[in-house]
Length: 368
Image (cartoon, rainbow, N blue to C red; front, side, top):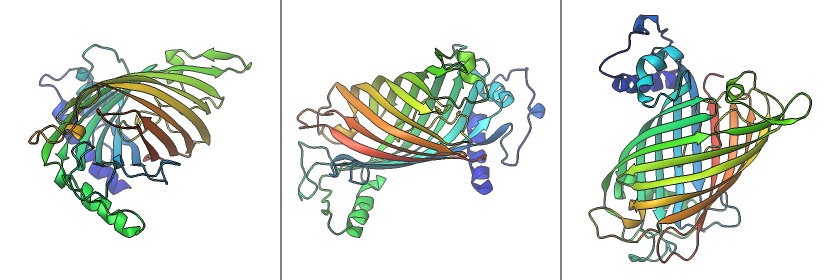
């Protein structure tokens, strides 16, 4: 684990150097920042997150069909800057001055997803259904949290199309389980560069029972306070997000409702197309929570449906897409296991019904 942290430290250390403005503030000198074994000034180990999403029976209960968004895997890893490093290298990104002493995280991620039409055994191109394609990206992200407010910024670069590896992965899996249909991958989209920027802001409203058993809403200062209460609680987490790049141009909004005993000290559950809250304070005892999310996405461009910019447009995306997300989380000793299902409404003109995927998530506290 120490070697993995050292490699991660080099990567995020380079990120911090690139993020540094031309005119450095005088408040903190570099010599005053401690240097841990990983090599990043003022950073400590964060979290490692693993995701696996699929529309098969192991994930999407009572569904189990390969169609449209059919599989995704992702890994995230982070380091936690201390206050000196944040103010020295990262505070300039807070252009509106909203954060004073935030908890922050710097991280890297890698992700692969692939997509198929509904009838994967048809040996010819299907121009009226989701085209075969893969998407493989790597990215850098920054997170900040303070009081009732959290934000996530991310930049991804990769490849969309034949060389993203979707076809060999699906063919290998289907060969390992002979009862499955062999996909044709006819009409796969051509390669193109994937460059994608993400931003999401979340807010938290949390209610918890006090020592007298009365339910009350916690203040922003109490949300940051230690120690974490063991009392059951309920929270509402509204969010707004935007993506801009060669794959997606869209905006989304929604809210997460969560009940837990105790509630995790983070800004909501994880899933592959979003993120883990790497600024969280990991639970040291057992915890369990359930959650529900409702949201909508306003779509201007979706290359996963339109295909490569070098091809004629395949499908016309719908302007408004809804989603519903239900799941549960277990925490213990710096480890978290999560399971959830997501229902997404029709995403392109002519689609007969929505899609459902299941997500398994594992999160490890690297400092534990």
